[in-house]
Amino acid sequence: MISRVLNWLFAAFLLSVGLYLTIRGWTLVSLGGSWYYVLAGLGLLGVVALLMLRNGAAGMLYAVITFATLVWSIPEAGIDLLALLPRLMAWIVVGLWFFTLWYRAHVKSAGGGIFVAGASGLAALLLVISAFQKSPVIEFERTVPT
Image 1 (tube, one colour):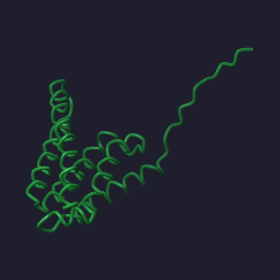
Image 2 (image 1 turned 30 degrees about the horizontal axis):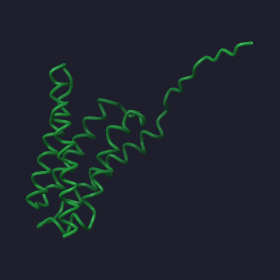
Image 3 (image 1 turned 90 degrees about the horizontal axis):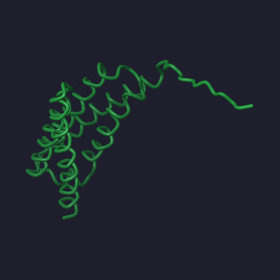
Image 4 (image 1 turned 60 degrees about the horizontal axis):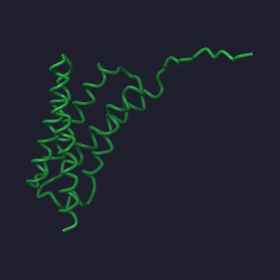
């Protein structure tokens, strides 16, 4: 019972994020921006549908979205930690849900947790690598009144 309620709440959260990404993504596309947000939003809506059907492929689809985000973020942000963090960290944190017992108790088939672990692990590895890259330090001139 509790696993069903928690998965419905998780699905409602993903539904709101998916709708937001899809709607605002269309706005970006109309202004000449990237299609990534529309595709990620539609993918999340697919994850929601699979969660409602109690299909374990929801985890695999989420892993595909996370991996696609990883691939998209490298040319978009380079190997800059501060630019990669907002692109990858939310996907990694939200993906932790697919490892919970509540998720596993809710789905009828294999939950795809290993795929989420692989995609999230690669994203985390990229963040670690980017943390050790040289970044320019921005210094501002300070004028002290005398």
